[in-house]
Image (cartoon, rainbow over the protein chains, first blue to last red):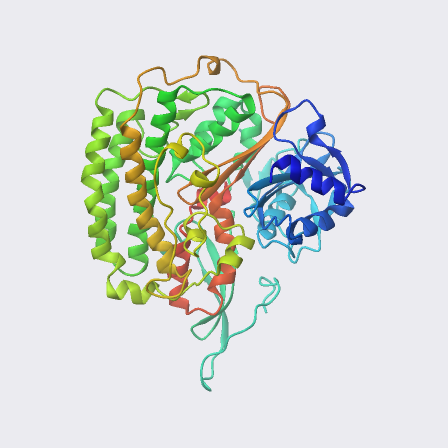
Length: 160
Length: 388
């Protein structure tokens, strides 16, 4: 299966869930699909469980701050069909919320915690959404573009 | 259940017979010799049996991804050295290949072949450290000394080629920092001849040592389905019998032009997917790496090692790309988002050890506390890469 065929299959199954197809743009690099946040779980579940698709691996989950909006980006792998598909969910800055896929992939557990920790994206349904890399009492989400570095942390001064 | 262990509970094993035991919480790390770095794990035990474990990471978090957004593309390479500091060449390579893919850069063939040599030598060096420290985890000091003696020879080769022993910054976007000095390739060939027989020594010394087998076999069994769900890759996945290697499945550089095997666990001395299988995959991969280096050495053309268009400030076109390579620890992926400027919008590093380590809670469940150390060692993680 090629990536274009996988995209076509997803578009045929979920015509209402896909906001746009990244192939249409004139961008370099990999094509991707932009999925509506409320339908992401359905799409991923189908991709994993459909016998023709079999995306059995969550390769990577990244939170991205595009400046205006945040996004949660999923790289899913089908080792059976030897194809990788990239799904992107665009989330409003004020209330970035998307369903967790920890029930489908164990790997999503730590990855979602990381995106929550660094970008403040809330994954509803995650069993334990707490900070993973930063300290538990850290304030703010460091990978956001408008993040302001703290002047002090527990008496340790940041005066460089 | 303590408030620190609020993840969904696992089925609870009990001590055999009517032994009366007491549950307790035990904190291991972050400063502990057997946790291979600043890694902390809170273990809930029932007597000697581990009921649940909760890994705590982040003690080595250095904001790699934040820094990568604030410097230009060329300046990110030295930071990738410090991710998996035991396999810096491979990290450099993963990042550079990602940016090169986004830019569509063509790399001189000499650089490609030299990259394969340094990546495979680095794989051997990394596996040697894993082999040596795993011996120490099981109580054997001698293999560690053998491993470090031989690793030293690789570090010398790297020192000759780039002046560094740990953080190389040798693979650059567009090629290599500089050409290999004259006769370096002969020295590599001499090293491979010296090193290959040593692997038999390691097998005699540790791999098939009866005490070591008793210690490492049948514990920390990781079924293939669990490994796949948790995103495990590299020797951790292959130890469970899954033949998956990016060098074979999505060849990069010129790995499709060399012959090598992908060793997998077969449950020879115990259950498939146990600690011994993971350990043995690494030892066998050292042989395969030697095989690859020998083949690459036969054909290293003369010529430049840097693409001429990569010397100015890089401004990759707008777009995003995900690319991955086979690191000694598994699939190292970089996800780069560019908006056409000289700095990236986002660089995400999908580090193999991060995913491999997350499966610890699943496989350590129900083991003896002393085996916990063996299980942690068999995952072979580097905290620099887990915490980034």
